[in-house]
Length: 126
Image (cartoon, rainbow, N blue to C red; front, side, top):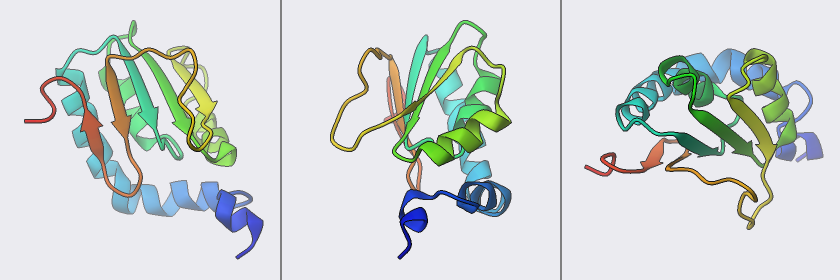
């Protein structure tokens, strides 16, 4: 496997966003964003943000005062996400490191989205 395939680099982030997001991830992102908004968070930490489909959905539903820190292991995926959501000062895109926490981030909601959606936070475990 080429290094760019492991890193989701090169054209992969754009193709992922163009084909996989609408086909697989967007409906789940919209549903989860609504659930997160219902908890009225002040700060959200999203891990495995990928190209930002959930980040965009949350930004559309959450008040302007809510801060979102979106992280992913792959910087090229975050770069693609940032292109789609440029100018939104509530969102901070950060590259995560495997096995390490996100320094300097406190959040009252944490969301993880690898190939399925999981959410941890008050009232979301019901």
